[in-house]
Image (cartoon, rainbow, N blue to C red):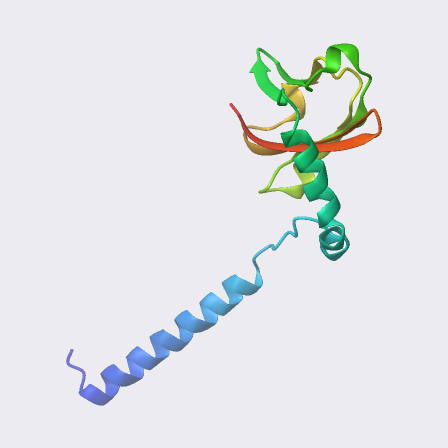
Length: 144
């Protein structure tokens, strides 16, 4: 079967239009999760977060995060002689339904069972208060 050049152009344009419509439909069906619902409010308060990070960076010791057997262990600097209060946010960048918060109950060795996580990347965001100073640290971990 032989096609003349006019038929070939019509077939080319038809395939192009079908492909374009398919790509538009695919784009509209994508799920775009926001990092946070109150993004703009957090952006306004970002200087406070920078100050908290500076406070944490000025500490002699750093936050230590380790995976040991079936637990994620988080040690805050100088926690042996201090009482800390704060939260640990385990942020899953690829799925907001897998995010969760944990209150700091033992700053010398806060333990979180690995059963609360799924395999993959998490960003552990730690905010704590000690002796009137506010601190923030953020580390990326991979759950095996």
